[in-house]
Length: 303
Length: 303
Image 1: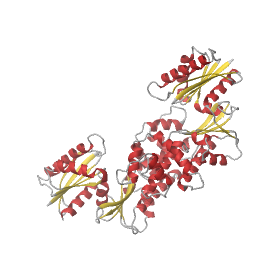
Image 2: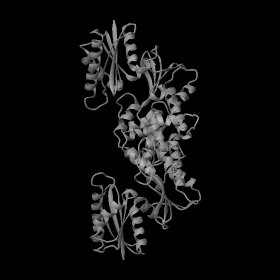
Image 3: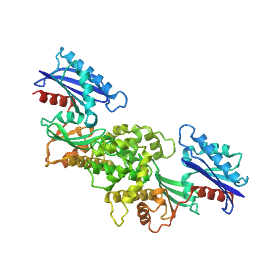
Image 4: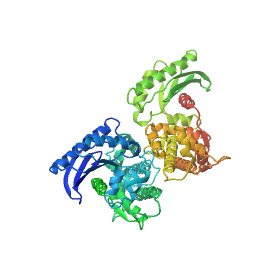
C-alpha cells in the first residue's frame, strides 16, 4: 500500500509517494500556484497538483497511491469545499481518495507525531494555531501585514525600515539599520534628504519584499564580538513578544508541544532564541518539509 | 496695489485677491489637482490655478494682482522649479510675478505673523517643520504611512484597526473599537471568524481611507460621562508622543511659536490636548485657511 503527499506552494508544487513504512517510492515537481489569485487560481493549482502527482507515479514505475493529501495555503475554512472538489477532479485518474489540508496542518504534522499540539509560524506572515485531532481548533493572527502578522519576517523588515527612517530624519535613535538597509535596497541619493530618498525607494517595493530585509535586522540584533544594535534588538524582542502573545491566545490547559515554523522561527535566529526562552518547559520542535506532513496525514488516514 | 493667494489642493483650488490692507476684493474656485500624479499632474494643476485666478480677477472687476503666491502640496524641493515654471506660464496673462510655496509654508503663515517658528501638522499625513525667514529650515517625518506619518489621522485610524483585530482574535485587550469600526466599515460576516471578516474588508480599503476612521478612535479616547476606552486612549497617547518627538527633532534653541495644523491638531481632539500639555510654555496657534497664508506671503513680498 502507498500514499502520496503534495505541497502546493506559491513558487513550486512538490509530491512524494511513500509506502506504508514511509519509504520514498517516487517524487514529482511542478510550478507553483496561488489559490487566492482572483483569476484562475484554483484551476491553475489543480493542474499543478495533477502534474506533480503524475510525475511521482511515473517515477515509482506506475504505482498509484491509496490516498493523496494535498497541503495548500489558502485551503482553510472559507474555500475548502471548492478547492477540495477541484483537486478531487484533477487527481481522479490517479487516486479516488483525496484530502485537502491547509498548510498550517502540513507544517505542524511535518514533525509532530501527535495530532494534538501547537504551531507557531513566522515566515512572510505570522500565525499561531492549536491542533486537536489533526484539525485547527483555534488560531490567532495570520491577519496580513496591515492588520497583524506581528513578529513575521515582513513585520521585522518593515519595523527595521521605520526605525531607519526615524534615525535618518532625526526622530529616532541611531541604528546600523539605516546604513545597511539603504545599501541593501540600493537607495539612490536623489532628493538631498536621505529619509525622502528611502521613501521614494520603498514606494516601489512590493510589501512582501520587506520580508527579505528581516535577516539584516535579525543579524544586527545578535550580540557578537563586534557589536549589538539596540534598535534591532528592540524590534526582535517586540517580534518575539508578539509571537508568544499569539501563541498564548490559542493555548488551552497549559503547555504542550510547539512546532516552530517559517524562516524566522525554524532557523537559528535571535527571535527563535527569545521565543523558546519564553516557552521554558514547553517541548519545542522545528518544522520540516510540509510534504512530509502531508504524507504523515495520509498514512494515518489509511491505517 | 493688490495681491493674490491661491491654494492648490487635491479636491479644490481656491484663490483670494486682496488689497494691501488685506481687504478681500475677489475670489475664485476651480477643481483640485495633485502635483504628484504621474500623468498630467503639473499641467492639470496649472490649468486649475489659472482658472481660479481668472475668476478672482473677474469678480474684482478686472483688477489684477501685483503678485500671486501659489501654495501646493508636493511643490517642495525636488520638483519646485518644474512646478514654478508651469505656474508662471499659466498665470502670465494675469500677473508677471509668481511664487510657488509648499503647503507647509501656507499653513504656517495662515496664522503666524512671524516668518520664524514651527509647524506641527497631523492630517492624513503628519510632519513637523521649522521655519526661518519664511522658508522650511528643517523638517521631520512626513514620510508617508509605510515609513512614518506617526500620529497622523491615517496612523490613528490604522492603529485602531490593528487593535480591533487583536481584540477580535484574542491577542489583545477588549476595546469598543472592534464593534465601532466593524459597524463604520459595514464589515460583513462571511468567514465565521470576525477577525478574518475584518481582514477581507480592509483588503478593499484604500490606505488613505483609514484616516476617515480616526475620529472614532479620538472620540473613544475622550473621557466622558459614560466611559473611556483605554485602548483608544493608549493609541492617542502614542500619537501625541510621536508628534511631539517629530517637533523636537526640528527644534532649535528652545521653545518658539507652534502652529498646529491638520484635522487631528486644528480641531478640539484629545491628541491636541495631549500635545499642547506637552508643549507647556510654548505659544500655540491654530492654522487657518491656507489661502490666507499665501496672501500673507504675497503681501510681505511686495511691501
